[in-house]
Image (tube, rainbow, N blue to C red; front, side):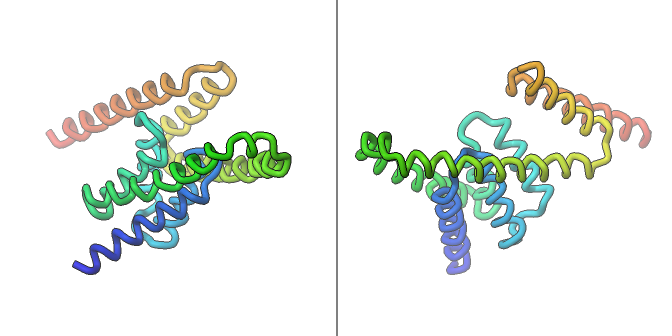
Length: 191
């Protein structure tokens, strides 16, 4: 039983540290989760992390919490999910509570304003890293459909200002259609 508690503690601590050190939103934490759970702990492989990223982005709610639910469940079931969620939500709650007490001082402090401005450059770099990794994984599939969907989704959101939700739902629909066609062909080939 000690091993289970050890894994839960590692899960909680990892999520807590990642969440406490993440500035800039969900995509930043996805990159850090990949480094922690795929490369360092080897709890997930690249494809699983890509699936986690796709699911968490598609589901309603904050991306880090959604990822915590999936990764925690994958590691230790429901208790793992609850442990990971707690580790993920505690740091922002603590930080925001402290900031709210001193909001006026933070708002007018030029040093803090400068620090936040500079951190945006780092956040942009981490998000860019996530985009490159995700795009690379799509390209590795060598499926024309997936690569085309990625390019068209980018054009639709960036140039045509199409809602990201509409793009995600459309891709989901195309994915289900592709799966149905693949299963039909497989079934027809077996007959």
